Every structure is written in C-alpha cells, then in structure tokens.
Amino acid sequence: MSTERLTTTSYVVLGLIALRGPSTSYDLKRAVGHSVGYFWSFPHAQLYSEPRRLSEMGLLEVATELDGRRRQTFSVTDQGSQALRRWLAEPVTEPMQVRDVAELKLFFSELSSGKDVLTMAKEQVRQHSDRIRVYEDMEERYGAVDRLAPRLVSLRLGLRLEHAALDFWTELVGELSNASGSGQARDAS
Amino acid sequence: MSTERLTTTSYVVLGLIALRGPSTSYDLKRAVGHSVGYFWSFPHAQLYSEPRRLSEMGLLEVATELDGRRRQTFSVTDQGSQALRRWLAEPVTEPMQVRDVAELKLFFSELSSGKDVLTMAKEQVRQHSDRIRVYEDMEERYGAVDRLAPRLVSLRLGLRLEHAALDFWTELVGELSNASGSGQARDAS
DNA sequence: TTCGCACCATCCGTTTCAGACGGTCTAGGA
DNA sequence: TCCTAGACCGTCTGAAACGGATGGTGCGAA
Image (cartoon, rainbow over all chains, first blue to last red; front, top):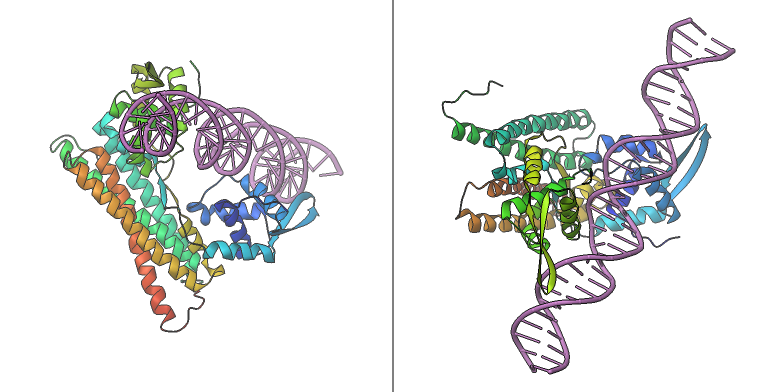
C-alpha cells in the first residue's frame, strides 16, 4: 500500500463513488459531465488512472466483470470513506480560483482596439446567459427531487458567480457603447 | 523559429512585457504577484522558461546585461505585438472556470457532518471578506491614478465574483444556524 | 573583512493535461 | 448471415504546469 499523497482530484473520485455507489470509470466520466465537472474539471483519463491508484492504497475496492469489455467497478472501502470524511472535516486553505481568458484579455485591453473589447463583452454576455440557463434547467430538473440536496446548494454558488459575471459584462457593454460613439452607427444585434 | 503553440500563459508573459516595457523575469514575477496573478496564476519557474521560448520564436528580444548576475531583459518585437493583438482580437472560446475546494466539499457534504459544513461556511465568509478588502485597497491605491484603466476594470470583475461568493456563504451560515436551531449539530440534508 | 541573509535564476522530478488512438460492441441494411 | 458505421470504452503519449530544491550574488551588519 503506497503512501502517495491524495490530491483534490483523488477526493473528487472518492466522493463521487461514495455518493453514487459502485461505479465504473465511464460512469464517473458521465457523472462528472453534468455535475461536479462544472466547477472542478480534469481530463477524463484521470478517471481511469486515479481509481487504480486509490485501490492500490486500499481506499477503493475493485470488482472486475467480464461483459466482453474489460470493465472494472469500484466501490469505497471503510478506509476510503474514513479518508473522505477526514478530508471533508479539515479546513480549506486554498482560496477560490478563477481562470477566465476573457478577464485576462480585458486586463490587457489597452493594447487592443476598443471595438474588440466591445465585441468580446457582448459575447461574454451571451455565454454567461447560456450557462445560467443550463444551471437553472438543472436546478429545476433535480430540484423536484430534493430542493435542499447539497449538490444543488453548491450549484447555487455556481449560479451566483455566473450572475455576477453576467452583470459585470452587461454593464461594461453599456459603458462602452455610451463612451465610444454616442452617435456612431450602433450595432443592431 | 519554432512553430510551437502559444498557450494562454505565453500571452500573459507577452502582454505583461508589452504593458510594462522591457522587463526581466524577476520584474515579471513581482508584477504577477499583485495583478494578473489573482486571476491567472502559474509557477514562477515559467517566468524564466517562457520568455526564452518566446524569444526563440522571435516574439521577444533579449538584452543581456552583466551587472554581475547574469540577467536578461526582454522586450516585445513587432512580431510579438502582432501576435498579441491577434490573440486579443480572436474570440474567447473557453468558459470561465472556477476552482474552489470549499464548493467541492459542499457538493459532497451529505457525506460529512452538518457541523463541519457550518464551520467551513463561516471560514469562507472570513476568507472572502479578507480578499475583498485586498481588492478594495488595490482599487483605492491605483484608482487614484486612472480610475478607468482596464487593469482596474478587470479587477472589478474579480471583486464582483468575491462579493457573490461572500453573499452565498453568508446566507448559508444563516440557514444552517437556523436549521440546527439551539440543539446539537445534526446532519443536514 | 567576513558572515548571514535576502535576492535572483535555474534545474529537476512529478503531476496534470488534452486529445489521439485503438479496441469492442450494437444496430440495421443487403 | 455478414458487413459496416458509429457509439462506447479504455489507454497512451508528449507537452505543459507545478513547486520545491539548489546554487550563485550582492549588500548590510557585526
């Protein structure tokens, strides 16, 4: 049993299996897509390597079934769920991190043309609106089941952040439109 | 001249040098610390390797001065500033990404105790408040110079996101405190 | 003058990453 | 029945990111 360090991604894998019950890597891949993946994404290849590592450490248990495709079902061991609970209980030290190329480009925008910034801002409004719609659909679909489910609650934080971004870009579009040409041909879109 | 792909980090380096004028890697390191680093962090070692790559591609120009320490000053070439402007003009495809372990732990919180969640929520309120104060200080310090500087504007987005997060965690603390009433901490859900 | 420490630059082993690749199954048309 | 297209599933690889170790340099204090 190795003494390797567990990364945040390890706990995501562990946690997902704990929530869903016994799962294959592919199950996880699909689950990630429309849930935790929205706020902690990583390459799907990791969903194959990580469970292996975790089972070597004794945190997961492997069941191999041969339905033609060699596929393995993982489930959490006692040791695994202990490790998970320990992680959940320990304080969070890393601050929230945002990575957004649009924000970056805005930061550097004095090097580009005002027109580009306006175009980008409008596009950002569109993209954030879309994302908000996705979140709200999800909230509606799963909210019927249990409106206080923690998974929904954390989704609500994502929604807040998206709204904040949307507001920001919307206002920026307004300011830029006013400032740039109070008389110039306006963009009809 | 290599045909390597430029990553977002490459453009951060390019952009920083374009904004600041000729800079050494260490200059960049310090500049990153209290500006763009807040929303696009990367290891400092990259600030030494990346400029080298960029100059091999002809996007940066190197001047070596021997003040004892072998230290190199980089400045942007015409080709470099063209590449930068091209990047700034092209549409943003990657969505905004948030990475927040607190949000993750909340997602998995049905596996932990309600008490842990409340503790974490309170701690999050503290952390986001602190971060907001840092941002506001910065806004004040640099805002005197030019309150419309794009670098400040993009900082304002960061501020909005922090406020959204702060509101979320604050409300959650309220809800959890009510829910558990005056009794013992219990499982939420 | 020497020491000690902050400053500066680079190197290195590991982990993460994106996505290409290759094998496996299923449906449905001939 | 056979064939094939295309979805499904798992693995591999080369590059980038990571972060800590290492080592050299200059400056102020003793």
